Each structure stands twice: as C-alpha cells, then as structure tokens.
Image 1: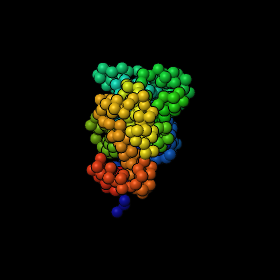
Image 2 (image 1 turned 90 degrees about the horizontal axis):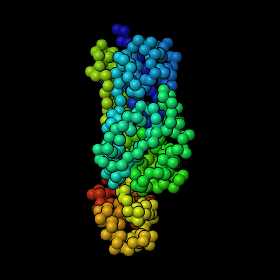
Image 3 (image 1 turned 30 degrees about the horizontal axis):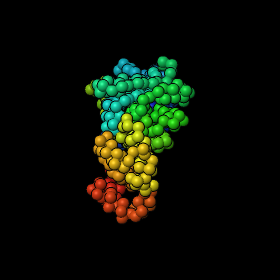
Image 4 (image 1 turned 90 degrees about the vertical axis):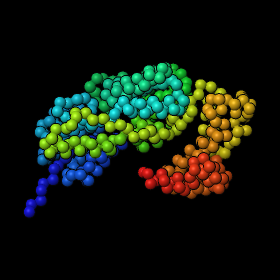
Length: 392
C-alpha cells in the first residue's frame, strides 16, 4: 500500500523576532499533534519577499505574514492562505492576529495599578499595529479622565515595517524634545519592545529617571530586547503561539474544503512580564519620589531606615507618615519588598545558591533571608524556585 502524500505547508514567517518564533512554534505544535503536515520554512526577516522555491514546490497551503509586497506571488500559488500579519485586509484570506485593543487595555491597567495618573504613547507612524494600539490606549486614558499625549516617528505611507521602525533611530532629537516635556511621573506605553529600547536610550541620555519619572511598558516580551534595555523593559506578552496554532487550524479547515468560520480572529494577550522599567509606585510628591528611587537603587546594599533619613529633607517621623498616607506602607516595608523582588528574580533566572543570593540581596545570612521570604510569601525560597520552574 502506497503511503499517502503529506500536505506541504509553506511558512512565510520570520524567525528573527520573538513574536515570529512563537508563531512558528504554535504552527509546529498543531502539525505535530493534529495533522500530518510537512512544514517548509527558511530563515527570513519580517519584510522578506516570497522565496523562489515556493513557486517551484508543490505547496498545499501557506501561513504568512502577508502584506502588499507578497500578496500577488502568494495568490499565484492557487492554494489556501492564512494571514498572521494583518497589516491590511486581502479578499478571501482569513486573518489571525493579536487583539491589539486588549494589549492596550492590559498595558493601561498595569500602569494605572502602579499609580500613574498621566499617560503617554510612543510609536511608529503608518505602522498598522502601532496606530491601532495608539487609538485603543488613548480610549482607555480618555475613559479615565487623565491627561494624555502621544508621539510617533515620521514615516512614509506604504513603507515596509522595518523601514518605519528604523526611522525611530534617526528621529532622536524630536523624540528627546517630546520626552523632556512630559510631566512627571508619566506612564508611557510604547508600541513594541523595539520602540521601548529606543525610548529608554533617549531617556537615559537626558537624565529622565526610569521608572520614577517615566514608567515604560512595551509589547512582545522579547527577552533579547527587554533584557538589553537599561533598565530592563516591562512588556505585554502576546499569545503568539496560540495565534500560530489557530492559523494552522484554520488552514487545515480550508484545505479540507471548508470555509473559515470568520475572516478575522483576534487572540488576547497572555500577561505583563514586569521588569524594572515599571517596578515603581508613582507619586507626585517629589521628596517621596526621591526616597523611593534611593530605596530601589540601594535596598540590596543592606540599607536601613536611618540611611534613608540621611538623604531626605524629612524627619523619620514625617517620612513614616507620608509613606503610609501616599503608599500604604512604611519605608522598611518598601526596602524589604525591593529586596525580595531581587531574590525572586535570582531564584527564577539563576542557579545561585541561597547563600549567594542572600549576599546579592543585602542579607548577611541565608537563614535571615529564608525567614523573611517565608513570612512574606508563604513559601520557602526552594519551593518558590521549584514552583516557578515547573510553570515554565
């Protein structure tokens, strides 16, 4: 008996970005568990053209980041296509995309919960996803009744996305002028992690303190970019793997002769990966903001409340009162919380011993660290580490 031919599915999706890699992972998972596909893919960038081998191969379906530069060659293949870029609508091609309205809502809620009551947005003009996130974020801010301002780098309508994003590297002067006029503190939502890195570099160059003056949150949760930022960038994590899975599911339906249930399907994001760029309680009180910044920068050096009063214009009693009124905690409690944030990070991301972690977090002995950690979290450091790694 002859083996049945496996459908060949071409993937025109970049592996150069975290989002694209997650898309491919979702498609691959569907192919491994639900169907018997042969997946065809080559290394490419976001705006790559259709590779010649696609027209020379017997392709049964395509999952692609479709735009006007590749639509005609893809249509000439005469096979079902699913678009996972959604830059614009093409007749007869279903789309699966991250729900950018939900992304903006999640970013706004994160900044709001950090105490920000002034908001800003920074993106790339004419990049569809950036324009959509701007509109959705502006709507959230308007509903809250808070002040809002936005800046988008200039670009030409119809330019490729990578060209628009590169424009952000050449508009440093107007970006700095805009950033310098922001009232502080402001919660700033940037259209993606690439823009976030550009903004953080500009802020550092003009002495804007992140996150005390401006808290910054991006989108994509790209580890390579977020961890290169100074400070590391908080980011909304989209569920790109599920986008890829659903695209594969829809393509299988089309190959089987059934039309898609809907032309556009939006997938909500997962969560916010919080890092130092938003790890703050935003306050308008300048003196309190200065003290909070000192705590965040020095808590893991073993400081105490006496050290704080030495750099403050307030007495210890005044400091304690204003902390309780504005932040709902004492300076000592903030020091402890900052130390434990560092401990949690090291437990999650390293194989350091508890003794090594204690020294990095400002504790003289691992026993005192363990006691405080158990009291504040309800878990021992070992259990916390195990639980986190199981959830990866």
